[in-house]
Length: 178
Image (cartoon, rainbow, N blue to C red; front, side, top):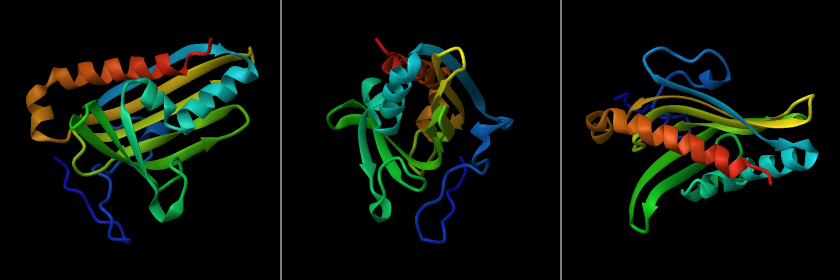
């Protein structure tokens, strides 16, 4: 497990060193995920899917409880903002703390990336964005790299990869435009 570093502000740092790598070549020594799916067509779909990502609705739609922490009064999906995601029911759930490290906001692409914070079951980064293509299709993309960050995820081995794969599918399902 990577030992978390402290940021200059005194907050816990991300639990991995390759910050921003989901925007390019994924680092060695991690499990990699690259998945894309057409979620609809047209500007309305792009706006809807973008909103679902940027308002955490994609995560909620995948079955996670989302508690966005506002650092310095910033909106939830802003670089530096933290979030706690919880998979489970009520108090019986697994918390996963993350910090937003990148926001993507262009005319044709919107989304963000976050990295893991201490206590997260995994160590790594995940990037979510939608792209409005020239052929009018809207494509949802997810890129991630991770490795076990806690004893129980190391012990669980392939179960963690299965859960991550299932959650990736659920995220993309939550972006589908009707």
